[in-house]
Length: 188
Image (tube, rainbow, N blue to C red; front, side):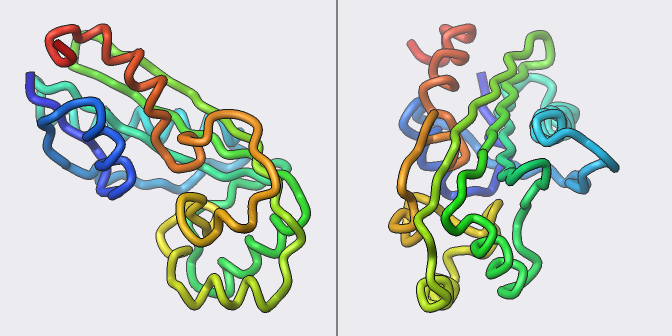
C-alpha cells in the first residue's frame, strides 16, 4: 500500500522514516485559521483530519498520515509566528511559565481511520531579552508553532517536560507506530 505523509515538515519526514521505509510527501493545502472560540484541542484535531481528508480525496488507494501541532498558553493558540516581533511576543509569554503542546495525527486509508492526540506540558526557564534575540537570529523559530523548535537551539530554554517529547517535535512516533499496526502489511 502506498503511504503518503501529508506534511512538508522535515522532522515528520525523518520520524516517519524510522517506521516505514517508503512513502511520499504531499502537503495538504487547507485553511488553518482557527474558528471563533474554537477549543485548542478541537482545533488541532480538526486540522489533522482536514489535512488527511484533503490528501485522501486525491489518493483513494493510499494510507494517508496527517499531523498538526498547536501550542497553547491558557486558552490562546500560538501558531506559527507572522514575523520576528510575533515570535518575540510568544517567547516572552513562555518565559518562566508552562504551556501545552498538542499534536493530532490521523491515519486514513479511505475505509478505516485511526486518530491520535498526544500532549506535553513544557516549562521554560526565565528568558532574558538577549537569549530571545540570539535565538531569533538563528531563524529556527520560523514556520514553527509557538515560535520554537525544541529539538534544536530552543531546547536550552526548557526546564521540564511532562508528556510525550515527540508531541512537541510534532510527530508522536510511539503512538503512530502503535496505530500503524492496524495496517500489518506495512510493518511486516
